[in-house]
Length: 329
Image 1 (cartoon, rainbow, N blue to C red):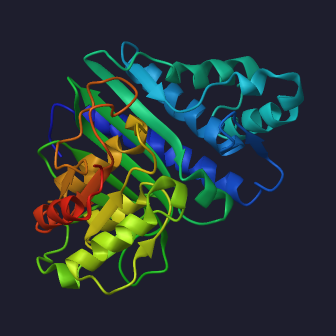
Image 2: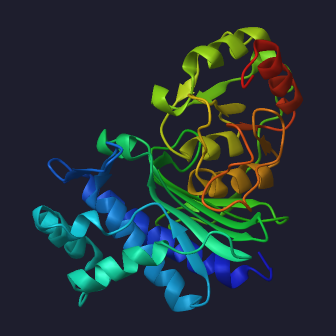
């Protein structure tokens, strides 16, 4: 890629590689290392370590850029969390040997940046934490937003197969707006290659990609949409923005994140990277009403309801089916 964003992409890709390696190292040791946030979702040492590594890399290269990330160090600073903080420091020390607890907390809190500026990064240090804890799919998702549009995206999926029919795991997808998307092994062992969404235009032949967690989307409504579209095959269910990667490379045709309760607002870090990856692979990403995702409203997609990602060819049919079923009314 030869672009005005070439440096941003290079820094982002290197940061995601490091964070993904940190997460993979921690995953086998995760038992007993879970902290409960106030909303009861699990947070691991890898969440904090990943965020520290990525935020530090962005601040070092782009000191004027804000970073909007999911985690904050407050819980780590509590006395009962001291053993967990020490493990976070140990994880980060794999890349920064002289780091201490205060520095790690400071790096994590770089992610508390202003989401309303004209240029900022957004990071989910581990998207799909429950998948991570189960030893299944998760992602490190990083994107640059300028003037309300996602212009750079890097999606690291440490447990996703690099390619069709291969046992090699650890995939990264990188995209610049208007320049397509490239996929590569996270370990850098192989050359990058292009990916495109599927050519499926017959909805009866389409394949859904859904969240494992029912709390993330309404599976019953999704099943009704599938019946309306004439889809008989089983869904691909996996955690995190790895679903976007699966749609981008044509292994699934439709990903729907349907509202689970009135007024719920999706977070920008849950969709920014994945949405650009799918779009640059030839797909379409909107909300359930067909409106483009609006990343100009701060930390939440408050102008949108739900998220629909497709191969592009099926998008209008999916939106029509959603309206027919009454989703979002």
